Length: 123
Image (cartoon, rainbow, N blue to C red):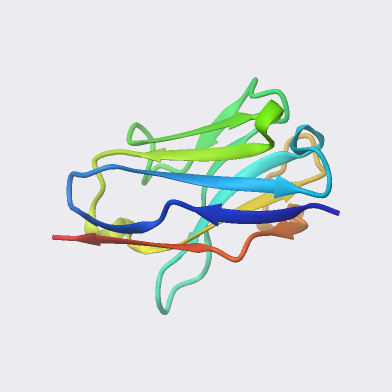
């Protein structure tokens, strides 16, 4: 098993930046492909970004492509999400998740989840 803890959320003005972190414990992060998801009030949880175990491949939702960057440091057992040019519609609880699949493609491929961190973007 792996335990995931997100941090770095907060309140930021539109156009600003935040970096989220996800610290893993219990098992080494390099065993998992990792993803970021978000959930806004009244909406379903949606995919944001994904990164493979060796950082060889990343994938983003259209809504964040070009603004967000997912990265990982397996030596530090930590996943990151750099968020630039934030918009009010980016407001949500952000979750990191771990998958045992090499290339997870759907939300149910992720078996481990953090508790989430709130990101609020003011206009």
